[in-house]
Image 1 (cartoon, one colour):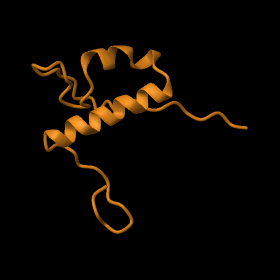
Image 2 (cartoon, one colour):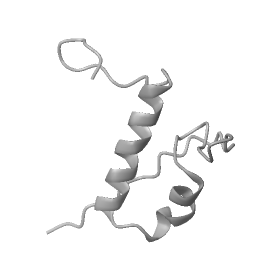
Image 3 (spheres, helix red, strand yellow):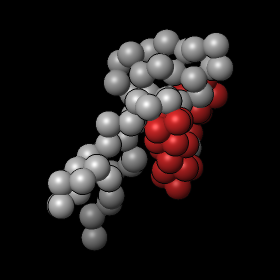
Length: 72
């Protein structure tokens, strides 16, 4: 049985916190960034879901296209 790789950081090397303590690059909060290395994969997935929601709310979500060519 092979071990699954840990959930990867969403960091895009654009590291700047806005007035709400949210990174303008990855959409994580300062606390989420600081504790990422100690999180379980389940916690990391929850953070990624919050990041997606934050990005969508700001009109920043690029997403991916599904098989039908629609944005996921």
